[in-house]
Image 1 (cartoon, helix red, strand yellow):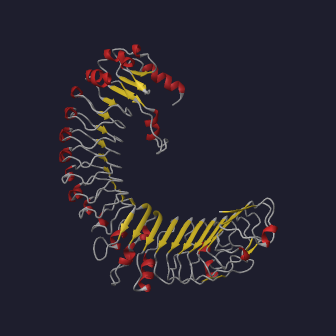
Image 2: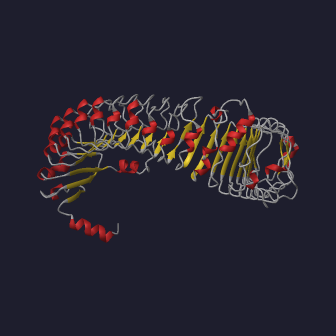
Image 3: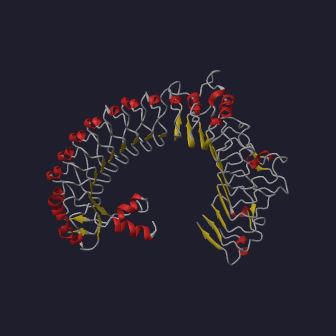
Length: 574
């Protein structure tokens, strides 16, 4: 806000809004309605003496710098917040007198362990925030604040339970217990019929929800991230207004309610980091779903791959697990999978588990999972076919910037990834059956002038049978490659011997005992890391680039090659 506008606003509201600075509480008038102040290490009762006359005060709001910085994710997680304290006379004597309070915050006062029964006089409270206090249990009298709409108890490390009387807060809209030690919610919470937002994130001791939570028909946002929940109540399928359900990192969660298909207004479902093995049936009915982190395919149970194809509004990223469970029956994988129709999907992870019984069927599954050409990130894990589908590496995927092909141990060739003009990062690992990387890796000479034109980082690892890398001399490939990492390829002898790598600055080699390499075609290489399995007799130093300053290895034998090193090069063990 412009300074002049801010000054004008403060001038107009000066009689009703007051910010307490220093010891100027005597300036508070009987007409003051809203009070804020900067928290100090110890806020003594004398600081608030002037408030006794402010009988019509509506807002009591401490401004803790540490708390505010945490709210905007500036404060590092590891940092210990400063311990602030407030005089007990303020909480036990002053505040209960302010019977017209609407907003009360005692954020980050570590000495606040309980509220007096006299707080029951604050019947007009709309907002109560006791975050980062030492409160152990809410007093029963809180239930008398039946106008309360917002209750925030975040990072109350001593809080282990809520009273049954919390169910009397019929007007409560927002409740957050984030980071508390609460183990379960009272069944009475199922009578909070106005509740729209329930935040239970990082309540690591929370093991279950009330069975009748489905009564909260107005719930729109629920997060259980990082809790110990194992199973959600079946009644959650009745939360027809629910829009966001976050279950990320619920590492004990094994299943979702059978009636998930009834959540027709659900737009965001995050189940990453759970132990789910299948999706409930009829997931295809969630046609408003825009963000779905993961989709688990069960074996002969749960939602099929066709149900996933009905979710055409998905965007962001999607992980599809257990693709080995896609049946081989003629109608098990029809043309209506429609992953290609998800035009706003930017990241796709396709994952198989176990060895395939039919490599042809696996290839057919991958054929049907072709995404839209707007895809930017692609990850394929555990693919059991011998060759990839034609769409993998097709030049029409011009927006892909990162790709990883991992544990495709039966593949005998790589797709034409050189045709992907925007590809910047590529990882290929676990191709146990690959013996030769041939010209097909670069793509058709007719369709691409400079293969891997944008690639900056290339990692090739765990390919025990890889022996040869074939490339045409003079091919202008890898013009932007900056980092090359090769590991676990014991029979590989030569790497990119026909290529000039004008941008390469970092080379890392591990577990490649037969590999011969030279730096003569890498004019600006800066850092080389080798392991003891590489063997210095296979390092053709030749002329080292003048800019190279680091050559590291697990072991440095006394070999003649060392005398060729420039004095500017640091030749040291890892």
